[in-house]
View 1 (tube, one colour):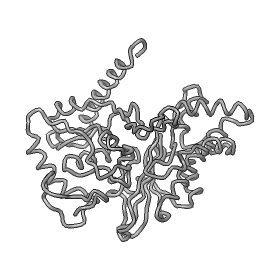
View 2 (cartoon, helix red, strand yellow):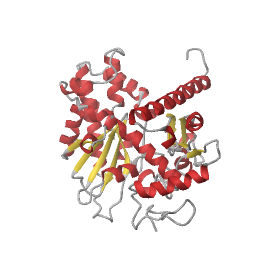
View 3 (cartoon, one colour):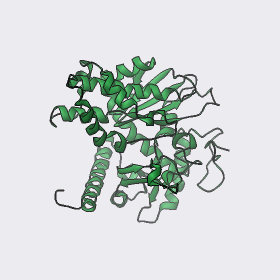
View 4 (cartoon, one colour):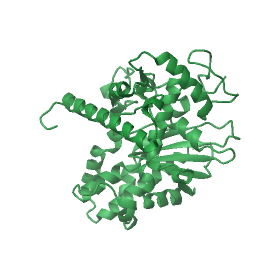
Length: 384
């Protein structure tokens, strides 16, 4: 992409992404022995190019205290996928939430609740991606407790940046946390990172590369020039401990301490990080593999679920998950070119009622189409 404008580069990335999505869908059908004609619809998250839901603007830059809207830019071209398979495709899941003042993240909360909640045990789901996010899953018997979800801070992002820096790009992650496990946690690093006021901000809250990416890591390296005794593995150990400390910090916002912490995402393979999280929180951990689901598949499964929510007229985000003022239906829909969307929506709605464990279902399933009546209260998102 050298020599191209930013817009050209984004266009190339969008094209590459759509080609990859189409190819992977074909491969998935083949591996699963599913006919493409059996696909009802698809959801694509795309790539987050920029995300700034709650602008932190200094007073001197905003003297009139004007309400500055949040911004989220998702790179995606769902039209190729829709035309290839003749299906509705849901995309751009975050913009609707951000447009009304929500954080636009985390979005997988309702899927976590549907997939991992337990009738009697209070659980939490921790997604360890570049950013770590926590979903509190109260037992069904604790009906008064809220399903809360928020980011806890860096997950793998700073760890991966450090590993790439240490190995001059030859390794992009610390496999199984072997190097961090042999390092010594340096308090100076933890203090530097955990002093960020973001950790004290109550949920709902989200964060991203803008806060914990390359710029933050460069600032950390400059800071470490004052501490020449810090070894490479010490840096990795300190970053892993900081990620774990962020999770513990998030526990203060939960109604009660979870009995079990379920880990998903690529970071769940990091044995050292898992041990640190379990030790520092005092909560036993397991991964989604215990339930038969690969940790790195959870996000893809979640957005397929979110697509079903959108196509069946259900909200994907709630005030307790993203800070939106009311339950929000997220995502835009690309209809199939054959004009069969109305009929297909009816089929999807009926199938969704039968097959998906919607967390809003407090009464026996009804064959309702979008717009046929109030399904949710604006405050809680529960069925009326």
